[in-house]
Amino acid sequence: MLNRILGQHPSVAVMKELHYFGDLFKFGKNQGVINDSELIKITAKIFARYRRGLWNDFVQNTDIESAGTLLVNAHKTIEGTELFHRFIEYVADETGSYLVAEQTPRNIYYAADILDAYPNARIVHIIRDPRAVIASQKKRWTRRKTLNAKNIPIREMIREKISYHPYTMILLWKKAFVKGQDIQGSDRYLRIKFEELVEYPIQVVRQLCDFLEIPFDKKMLAIQQVDSSLRVADNTSVGIQKSAVDAWKKVLSSGETFLIEKELSLEIKQLGYKKQSLPLSSSRVFFSLLLIFLSFPTHLLASLVINPHRFFIQLTAVLIPGFKKSVRPT
Image (cartoon, rainbow, N blue to C red; front, top):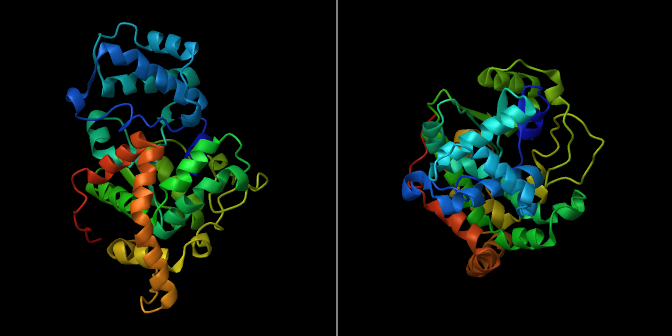
């Protein structure tokens, strides 16, 4: 949603998810240097994702040509942070934009490194009730049908179905929350609660514009409601709507709700969300939890088999130092 809001502003260029950090480039690996043999390949892959999206990132000749142009006057080895900076400048020049927005959710895992590497960068972190986030992930594999998203490959649907497990999603959500907490004191970090955005859209979008130092434009509120995993596609709806806030209650099982509220109890309380507090003594909750735990080993093995590259990226994200830090008081 945030990317579409920003995309309505005349001074902002929004991009598809590039999955650059943690995938094409890893902070700390070889001191962040990309060698000559990899440089053109990685740069061409960035162009492919920028132009056609993550699911259709097969490199074409035009991508290779653009990569060569971008790297003119570059050394045979270049730091990965400099490469990304060059690409952002290219997008800004191509679109005539003041700001360029990159929306990969996984960027939050590398937020501190990004702020260190780019003095002018700003991070906007949308945070949402973890039950709603996990419900959305559970339904994500159905988007091809519910959203008429025929551009989503069937192989991606299968991967999303296999990759979902509530405990894995809990670990990823919690890590993202902790990484946001780590930089909360920075004046280049803004955390926005999804629920406040849909409840008070004008106020929150104005706050966003102030943070980014761009003028508020009312067109930013006129976005289509087309990409929620918790709703059927409706291309006629325009504006920021509240309908997705409590939709998770119809999606999560009792065991999933219990597990999320137990594992993320402190975070849910700190963020002001109300727990359902389902009793473990309920047979419905107990057997639902049992099924969740029994399915976890199969989930891990299947996720590794279906996409080992992405499996290890997520595993690395979870294991990034700082996961066990306690929740800071508000």
